Image (cartoon, rainbow, N blue to C red):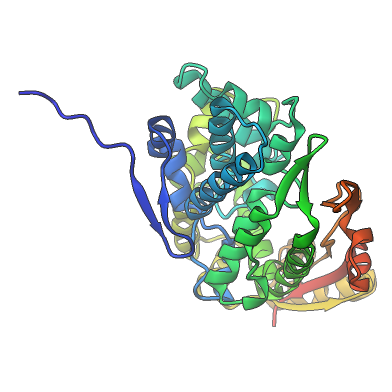
Length: 407
């Protein structure tokens, strides 16, 4: 009996863009790969769902959405007589599809607790190189573009810049799932206004208001969603839970954990010893490993680990205060002394419950400008081209300080 080949030219239904087409069989095979399927088990927004209950979408949703927007961008640029070869087109789809593949469980929390000294971008690159070996070198050009090393710079800018495809998807998607309408940008309009001049990715002058709205939406989403105080405190508590678990593991204390989480708790992982085996273990680590461990740790005999875990599971989070100025050391120490007395722990251990940090938000950096293409063919930085006075203000980073402590 003749074996039928599976249909690889699938269509996916996305709540934001409607039908998304998988362009070819290679892309289909990359999406089917276990490394990519892992993104289904990593939330796009960490603990933001403790504030916005709808924010349960995953990195998988986002990556597929980015690929869809990249298809639109390629169509628009070709229509404007910008030459993009089939090989370059495919490389763009692969690079944008895999740009976030190195994110760990709960996105940024792992980077600050149990996997140190190596960023998610570097891990993404390791995954891409491994996939390149498996797919007989077919990802070589995608890797070059992802690293920003390809000679046609505008292709690299589509992957990573201040107005890249990644931002065009996550702002619209996060706005949709959180219900925060201030972030709802017109990604279609922005892509329709894209052009290339002197190897720069530019926006035509008639798209200037869409860019202004995009920058303001980004600023509002940061303060309202990404840096929301409840999300901030939950993420920092998660970092502290993992740090405490790592401390206990180093002392040889027995901890419940899945095999992949155990590997990262009981081994010191850094850039220098991030081997092929480490990558394999990382590819099996996702939100479910971390959540199941935290649920189990609520019963652990270590007071700090169990208390922090209980607080996260029951959403009884620490109180948070935010202000413009740095908190006085004296004020922080007073809080720590109170906590050490209340929980009968040392003041050193109280740092897990009382901590202060700074957050900053810069909506636009003139160091890597978004260029507006004038009718006369000149390029102007959006901050200078815009008649919006507040765009100039958006180039200044806004810094705030926060302190967390038990209620």
